[in-house]
Amino acid sequence: MKSIYKRISKSVSIAALLLAVLSCTVKTEEKNATYIDIAGALGKGRVIPLSEIADDVMVIPLETADSILVGDMSGARNFISYENGHINIMDKTRTIWIFNKKGEFVRKFNRNGRGSEEFPDVSGFEVEPETGHIVVFASTGKFYEYSKEGSFIRRIDPPETDNVSSGLISSGYKLNSNLYVCSTGSDPNNNESDKKSSAVCAIAFDSLSNLIGKVYFPESKSGTVPMAREVVSQVKIEQNTFFASMPISARLFRYKDKIRIRYEFDNIITTVNEKIESDTAYTINWGKYGTTKENYSAAWDFSSDVISLINLMESDNYLYFWLNLRGLAHAPIEITEVGRDGTQSTRKITNSYAIFNKKSGEFTLMDRPAGGNTMGFMDDISGWPVFWPKYISSEDYLVSFCSALDFIEYAENKDASEKIKKIAAKLDENDNPVIVLVKLKKQI
Image (tube, rainbow, N blue to C red; front, side, top):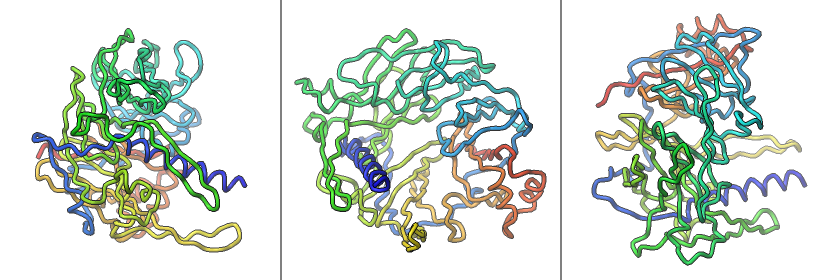
């Protein structure tokens, strides 16, 4: 029964997410927006060597001692950064660890708690390039700022605003010294006659919690909020049918001093500037494979011809896409699993990475190096395992990591470079993670 309940919960969550982003779908064309042709790239791809985009790769084992043991970092996409020559990590204990570029320990601190100077939960953190201050963003929409030494500076609360639910906040960024932006969502049960006021996807406020502005979901050609604000869908699992509903939402990500907003199944990516003005930066061609009101239920079927955007990052030269191509994946990964009863089943992983060259306008789906089960760039510079970034710094470094155990196991592979083998020979499997810094090529 527990197993069925978990599958139900997971499916309902997926459905809710799909419905949320689906609710704000707009087909908007902007003359000044850069065009990204994803539909035209389907069915083909290539292995991309890291040397195509990067000049150098630095493999940095972090210092380890009895008092310097970084906790679990699994899933740490929003909890690692590299700024001001320092590697900054938040592990699952909410301890913030700071190392220098050589991997030498600098300091650590933990301000997780319920005190006035502590954060009770966290959705991510950033390090200000100019000051080195650490800005922790909580899922409640609050920002907590600390000095690089860990001293509390201030807490910034989101303002009380009409038709906006703080429970729907998913991401937030400090845009400048006195301006904060966070995503939000509109309450689908709101029956206000002013539809536009209930279609807020982000808010901006200052350090005194004064509302500076609201960012609205893109409007359809008729000038109304796209699709219905409340979408209810049937989710059928085994012999039972459940219903999932979710308010509309949007996802923010940073590129240098800009905030981008992506709408998952929408065809646009917008930019918010310091005046809280929104412009379309990129227009995506999903072709006939984008999610619509008519086909959104097919997005739960991983053999369907529906594409979704999982995550997006940006550097000076490229956009880095993480997509789910479902039935359109030309080289899916097949995994055989054995159940508790001994029966075997095969499932396909249809996720795919891709990059978009901002100068040439070329969108390229990435094949897995050597046909393996790991996606990303083939590191032909350092002989590192297949690489994909978890963070992009303000100085255009791609940042990732792996556990010491995984590093050692890879070094035993016949394809590992001598450089990697020498580093691994000095490691113990319980050592701190190994950080990888990839220095990107200059502006193309």
